[in-house]
Amino acid sequence: MEDVAKFLFGISGNVIALFLFLSPMPTFWRIIRNRSTEDFSGVPYNMTLLNCLLSAWYGLPFVSPNNILVSTINGVGAAIETAYVVVFLCFASSKKARLRTLGLASAVAAVFAAVALVSMLALHGEARKLLCGVAMTVFSICMYASPLSIMRLVIKTKSVEYMPFLLSLAVFLCGTSWFVYGLLGRDPFVAPPHVDRPRQGSNSCP
Image 1 (cartoon, one colour):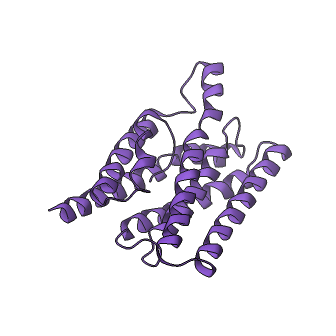
Image 2: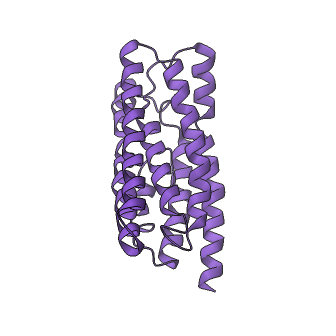
């Protein structure tokens, strides 16, 4: 029964996470229509991209057995977040914003490449899982701290326009599903990063 429950929560997490990844679409249609990123921050999308890449890598069978549902949704999420980052690069409101986004994207690619190469070339078995799991957890925490850059704007404008309610709701549901999935699978790297998700607004999962 635990395996069945884990599978069901994993499917639930995949469905909700897909909605979560797609929830910023109205924002990006606005950016494309206005040909400007305005005051929107690209930091959360870059951090989400890194988290998706590391999570998708961690869920692969040769890194972490029995976690393929983690890889499927994060692989899709990585593709979606890459599209968002490209939009930020194309329609950055200033040269400084474009360079900042490009720098973050380059750092994301470098970190992921380093983790992937070290885990494949230098480590095996539990050591490989440990490295990838720790990297996923650390950057998951960084990702959930990244929306703090938006909080200043919310307080300044006294508007939640840049922090949609549906986004926060999706994070709550997504975090709950993956937390239970991690508990049922007794995975020390899937469950813990989701403990604080219900209290935070972000744009990615798991």
